[in-house]
Length: 150
Length: 150
DNA sequence: CTACTAAATAGGAATGAATCTTATTTGTCA
DNA sequence: TGACAAATAAGATTCATTCCTATTTAGTAG
Ligand SMILES: [Mn+2]
Ligand SMILES: [Mn+2]
Ligand SMILES: [Zn+2]
Ligand SMILES: [Zn+2]
Image (cartoon, rainbow over all chains, first blue to last red; front, side, top):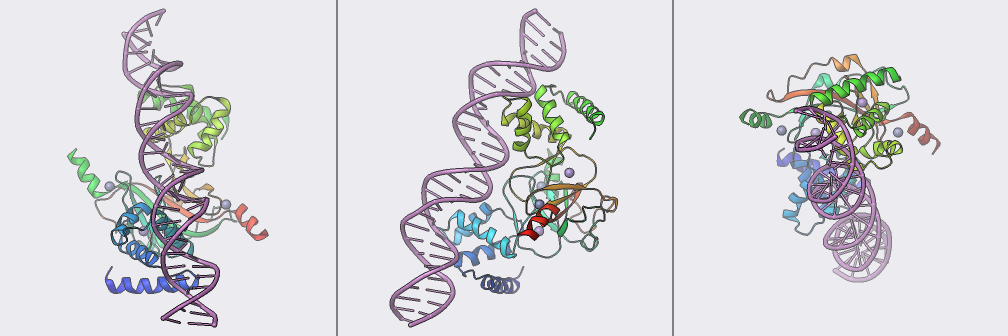
């Protein structure tokens, strides 16, 4: 993502914060920026390690709390995992995930036909669907290579 | 699931254990039986509470370790979650999940057209797909009712 | 610009989930 | 039946998350 686009996203983020009467703190903006720049669906701790480089005495709690705030105001999501630490995603567009069961890497993929799937008929008719995601479990290229060597 | 069907499943389970050179312990069978009987995708702790009634001095570690063994030998799966404790699923058939973001309940649904979806074209061609699941996030009927009251 | 106030932060304690360690018990098989 | 590797119970440890509280700060009104 180029710096132009990031700047725009951060503008919009700041607007959203204002709408929710949240203060624009340097920590919040830094965390949001690093989340945007990362394409790996980082955990709170992974992001903490990164943000810490610029803010040496930021606390883990601030990173974690802030990420959950992002989820609450709708600028990020927690993604589906199979255990371990929560992983965060700033990509709000319709998309889906590849999940490497070997190394835990989570990769985006886009697919119009998946996005356009109708909600199924045979679900309890009083379940109110808010979002849909396809998760593909498998082995990523890197792990495949390592495997074929081993 | 009727007792007939459960008995059959347990037979098959015992065979699988033998094939993997795993001992048939009363704990293993009890944990597997309770997992089968539960349709709520229980956590290790939830299952521990249940199995404990019949085996008062079973340990949590045994339940947890045993569930992970089930995953390893392919008689159960860890299902996709958005944080919190792992949830286990003995249903190996092609199916998908409704996820209540309010109460955390995970409900099965079956849908032929979802099962039959082709793997998408535009994924890294060296990602080896092992399984596909659709997750619908939303609000379940109970939580909807509670909400409309509140 | 200054002062005020509610919100946010840092840092550490507490809780929850999963795993590890070790002594003991128990299936399995000869 | 006896030997032995595997499995278990119980508690300790590690990792993830949330809570607590004193301090700092963004936003705002004067
Ligand atoms: Mn994503
Ligand atoms: Mn299921
Ligand atoms: Zn991988
Ligand atoms: Zn619910």
